[in-house]
Image 1 (tube, rainbow, N blue to C red):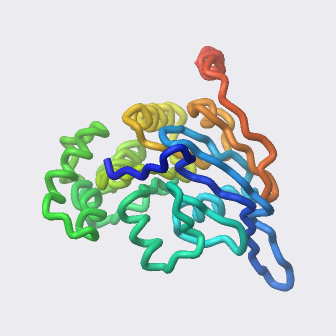
Image 2 (image 1 turned 120 degrees about the horizontal axis):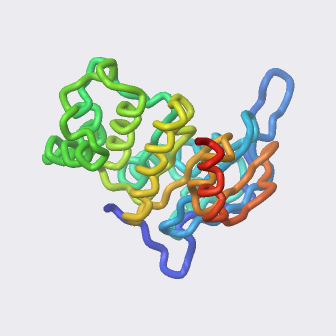
Length: 245
């Protein structure tokens, strides 16, 4: 696994982030003085309603966007002011993304979709690594299927395989169960937990408090501010499941 290490420090440390958007004649403070630390190996839920700022924060943590003010230290390096090329380099090496709607290429096979990040990196072992990643998510026999030949859960597994095939240190998942039924969503969350046990740092962006119960820590954001940051009760999920049944 390509790893980011910051001895004695948090893997992710954001301080006093501010991000504004100008909509018409109004200024929206998507992030309003947000500070957050994430240690290596954590599995964290970033929860909030639509418009709370959670996706804006994920985009900054994923080096897809920059804050207007504040700092973002990633393994001890301030990445908030890096060039677009440097941000792309960090994304390609150290960060994997999983999205609600899978973002798979419709005409490409599962294997071809998973290979993409390795092709961008110029890896000669792309095919073998992609097959290995598909086997890891339980789809070793579906490599030649296109997305329209797969179920929603299978498509999300392909997307997860694509996100981890280059062995990133950090996995960012934006509403990864939002397009799935509850049973399939549970399976996908179990897969994230298995990846976390392998040492990956995982942040799951969600509006669903039940999804947050699968994580070790929950950070709640509302109107651009963090209003709660607490460990998840490990017994809460077990107490919920009998009611769901």
